[in-house]
Every structure is written in C-alpha cells, then in structure tokens.
Amino acid sequence: MTKRAFITGITGQDGSYLAELLLAKGYEVHGLIRRASTFNTSRIEHLYVDPHNPSAHLFLYYGDLTDGSRLVTLMSEIRPDEVYHLAAQSHVRVSFDEPEYTADVTGTGTIRLLEAVRMSGIETRFYQASSSEQYGATPPPQNETTPFYPRSPYGAAKLYSFWITKNYREAYGLFASNGILFNHESPRRGETFVTRKITRAAARIKAGVQDDLYLGNLDAIRDWGYAAEYVEGMWRMLQADEPDDFVLATGGSVTVRDFLQTAFDHVGLRWEDHVKFDQRYLRPTEVDALVGDASKAKSVLGWEATVDAQQLARIMVDADVEALEHDGRPWIDKVNLASWDTA
Ligand code: NAP
Ligand code: GDD
Image (cartoon, rainbow, N blue to C red; front, side, top):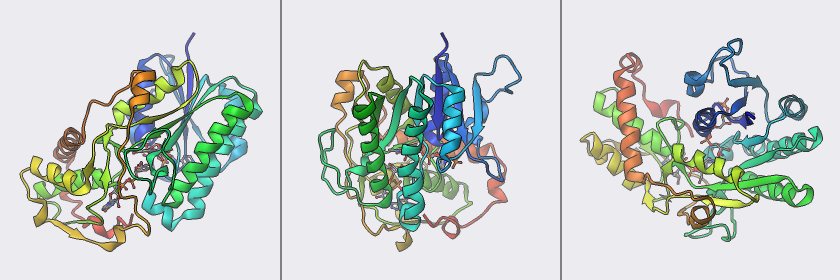
C-alpha cells in the first residue's frame, strides 16, 4: 500500500527536503502552498511532475494556516496516513515586528490543523515542528526534560503548539509527536537567517558583487546541523512504536563569529574586513545559547547528526559560490543587502 503524507510548509527549507525523502521512500506526497503573486515553489520545482502524468506523486493545494475550514476540507479529501506540520512564520526577529500574526500562524495554526484532523475523523500520525527556541533563557545543554523559557513571540507561539500537540495525544489518543529541533541549515536556508546571510555574503564578496555584511550579535551560541539529516529524524518519529517528544541536535556549540570565520576562511577572505554592526539585527530579548542533547533520539530512533557546523558552513559557501557562477544575474543585481533585509 502506498503511504500518503501531507506536508504543511512544503515550500520551505525543511518541507523541500522532507518531500524529497518521502518521494524517494515511495510515498504519495500532498503539500499545502500559499497563493502568492509570484512563484514560491522554487525549492520543490525539481520534484514537480504535471499531475496529469500518471507518474506524478506530488500534489499541491492552495491553503493557509489561518483558514481552518480549508484545512478540514483538505484532511477529509486527502485522508493522509502521516501529517507533517512544518508551516510557520519561522523568523524570530520578525516575530517581534509581527507578534499577533506570528501567534495566529505559528500558534493557533497548529490547533486549526489538529482540529481538522480530529473533525475529519481520519486515522493519521501527526508531526509538530517544535523548536529549541522554546528553551530560550534556560542554559544548555538542553534535552526533553529541560524547562522551557521562551524569549520571543515566536518561541511563545511554538510553546503553545508544543503543548497543544501533547494535549491532543493525551486527550484523544492521537499519534502526535513533537520534534524539538535545534537550528538546522542548508543551501536552501532562507536568505535572512544568519548562516545563509553569511555564506551568501562570503560568495558575493569574493565575486566582487558585494562589499559589506551587516550583522547583529556575534556572540550568540547555536548548535547548527544540516537540514537534510533532520528530516530523516522527523520521519523516524512517525515510524516509532509510540508517539513522543524528541530533541534533534548535533551537540556542537558554535558562535555566530565562529561560523563567520569558517565561511570567510573557506573563500580566502578576512571577515573582519567586511562585517559591520547594525543594531536593527539585535532582538529585544536574545537567546544566548542553544546546545542540544539528542541522546534520546539516538537510543530510541537510531538517529544521529553527522555533519557539524564547520562542514555545514563549507557546504553552504560552496553552494552559494556555485549558484553565483551558474546564474548571470548577480552581475546585474549589485545591491546592498542591508537595504532590504530588515530581519
Ligand atoms: P521556512 O523555510 O521558513 O518555511 C516555512 C514554511 O511555512 C514555508 O513553506 C511557508 O510558505 C510556510 N508558511 C508560512 N506561513 C504560512 C501560512 N500562514 N500558511 C501556510 N503556510 C505558511 O522554515 P523551515 O526552516 O523549513 O522550518 C520548518 C518548520 O520547523 C517551521 O515551523 C520552523 O518554525 C520549525 N523549526 C525550524 C528550525 C530550523 O532551524 N530551520 C528549527 C526548529 C524548528 P511560503 O514559502 O509561502 O513562505
Ligand atoms: N537573522 C539574523 N540576522 N540573525 C543574526 C544576525 C543577522 O543579521 N546577526 C546576528 N544574528 C544572531 C541572532 O541574534 C541569533 O542569536 C543567531 O544569530 C541566529 O539567528 P537566526 O539565524 O535568525 O536563527 P534563530 O536561532 O533566531 O532561529 C532559528 O532557529 C530556531 C531554532 O532554535 C529559526 O530557524 C527558527 O525558526 C528556529 O525555531
């Protein structure tokens, strides 16, 4: 029997890797996309086959986490075996600018989807994309028993989603698991998250199409892993015997400054010659240090990260250098990134 998966956030970084993984495993993949005036499907274009073609296994549906009745309709029609709920307003800095919207999408959006599952009466397994950002001010190392102390509207919204997922597990017996994922990155990472901002700038400065890189707090510590590995962990959570909550992390502890150093070294540049400070990238409350302990995922799921932050920085810089070389646009697209990146 072909398994059917439904992915919210399929156009995002993780959604694209997960769709790839599930298609490779023989799943039929159904994904929620937002209507936009420009195409927002570039991360999954390589997977798309015209649905009129009998070989198509990927199907896309317009919808939005703010539209509950649409979610009920989709759950009733698609009747997925597994639901991967990845969609969110996922940018921490932006959540301070748009706290109410973030609560609606990143928090209430989850209850809308859980209710859609419940109301449609389907038997399904549910994955919630929870976050290390929920630990906030609680010092590392963080694992499944560490108390949460969110430090942003995003972290608080994710905390609601975490608990409501757990509540549906306990109240209705839903097979619902939280993946508490530490930062994970890739060449597909959104351009305003710090790792991608750095690797893209390193490639552009090396190519002579950018001079400076404006950043905020360089002292923050993160546990950066490779997104392609983390989606395997999501899938394993839904194949487990019991629903549960799991941390996925590398255990590594790296500052933004360390990541900068590795990325710029890789293209033979000194970051100190190009990086400037801009306070707009500071957050009203910062999360100083996130370092995960993923030993439970290792023992129960057999999942372990293999790519560390240094390797990741090099993978991402190489990809950004290659993207510049294979795309003529950067030479006519000489912009100062700080002018549009307000996140
Ligand atoms: P991402 O690249 O920002 O992708 C977010 C996805 O959500 C996109 O597909 C986006 O659609 C969709 N989305 C946003 N608002 C929506 C709405 N109102 N209705 C429907 N879809 C909406 O995020 P990611 O890095 O892949 O992360 C995936 C999930 O894991 C997110 O929930 C994130 O908060 C969580 N998480 C991420 C990390 C990490 O380090 N990456 C760590 C822990 C948890 P568009 O393409 O149209 O914008
Ligand atoms: N974005 C950004 N831009 N961050 C900067 C900058 C900058 O110019 N300069 C310094 N930073 C610092 C931030 O203050 C933060 O401490 C760190 O770099 C990482 O920022 P982000 O890459 O934006 O990620 P994040 O840790 O806030 O959030 C990501 O990870 C969470 C998991 O812990 C996101 O992917 C969230 O969706 C995810 O839940």
